[in-house]
Image (cartoon, rainbow, N blue to C red; front, side, top):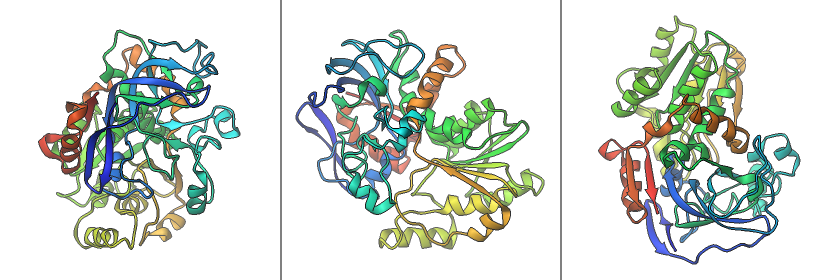
Length: 398
């Protein structure tokens, strides 16, 4: 089969690799019909995620059709209805892999699964514990083949897939795999109260869905921060957000002015480890990251700590891989801020979000700006990373 394989920093290739096979009775093989390039895939593309090896198949946001089911996949165990998974079923698969049986999966904390990361010894050395595996996201997180391919092996398929109806286009369903539950969880972690103001850094797909979710949860105002006009326009048009272009004004000062000097009640980081700033701070982070003296650029984290109101909440959904520097932790302590964060618990949210789509309350397809055949994945990565041609979300079609 054809698959997108990482080669080195800023280089991927579409190569011919062996087809996946059933390795465990709870596996299923999925023929992929749509797979997206996620903003966090750019961290891999740029060479910032450790333990990615040359030739690794990448990608984690996908959907498709079941072609083979292992003997241990009986009734689906998530969702309202327990239905047997059969070849020909159309499914969406969450990016995080959960076993369904450990204490964390049983508590709906799927991205903290004890059992899916078969290479957890690597992660335990770095982070102190083992978390769930993620498709196509380094050997640190399991070493599973990714989804930017024609086929994929899905482990724990009885708890790792959601059946979807045959009559809706992929673009309406694909993002319940990753981007929508990530944004939704980001808003949920804010514990939004009626009348709250929520600020969201980053107007990519996750940021857009975080804004929409914040309104669903009762926010009175949502303020979006970014530097690309097309992303800010998308936030105004589809997420109904007020916007700040941080290259035109200081975002922290603007938030103060917009909230009467109080600051936002909650702040959501939908950017992660490649955050851009301005001036000397940005130069400092860019230089230290290039010299491998700092793994992550934490500009957004710093700005949220200072911008949030006293007693406010910071929700961090952007990916961070290692270590950050020069954090204003005194502001966090003295202002009594609450930090909440994590990889999204996809299986917890997917049926809820699917129902919102089926009920006509959410149409996520607006984020798609480019559809490309799988063979053009290198071009897709280039325009997404470089923000060429107003690229916000790329969907690849194997």
